[in-house]
Image 1 (cartoon, rainbow over the protein chains, first blue to last red):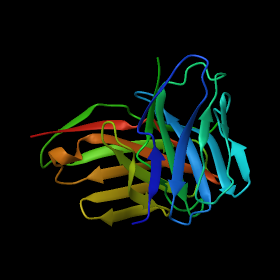
Image 2: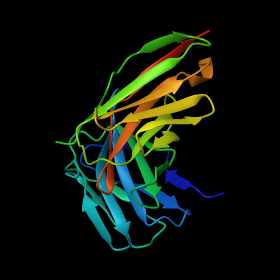
Image 3: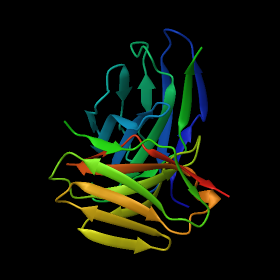
Image 4: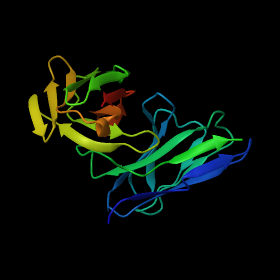
Length: 112
Length: 109
């Protein structure tokens, strides 16, 4: 079955550490997205990519980095510059802007 | 400023009643409108989308769009306890979507 796989499901980060969240899709979608969700809040866009080897900053890109070397993969790195990284991270993809997203199951990141 | 607003709730309705969820948006140029359901601790899942003014029905769900008023709503008929979740409204702005904060719905048995 086609879908989006995010890993790990839970991730703990120490202060000053970089961590990478994995996102893989087999839907053959060109566009992929990373969102952050904080308790009681909506989804906020971190980065998005509409084609391989190209990506754009979203509304809250500071402290994050991404790469898009393959169509299927869009990993997100949470760097030490992100001062408040504890949140639920969601990866999504879609065919183009007129279609809704398919979401992965999410990664819950906690700073310890 | 791209804004999507929803009443955060919680909205409580008795089982079998109609639940009405509302969403307003700021950009008159928006063309695509989506409703997602999100259970606690899970990722959102798409339940309805609407592009044209008027109503669109799918089973127990009806989406209503009024572009002149910049208003989109979701009606859930014969509400069930399994419908208890947070409902997110999403509106396109160009290539991307902006999500509202969500409305938490509680269906009481």
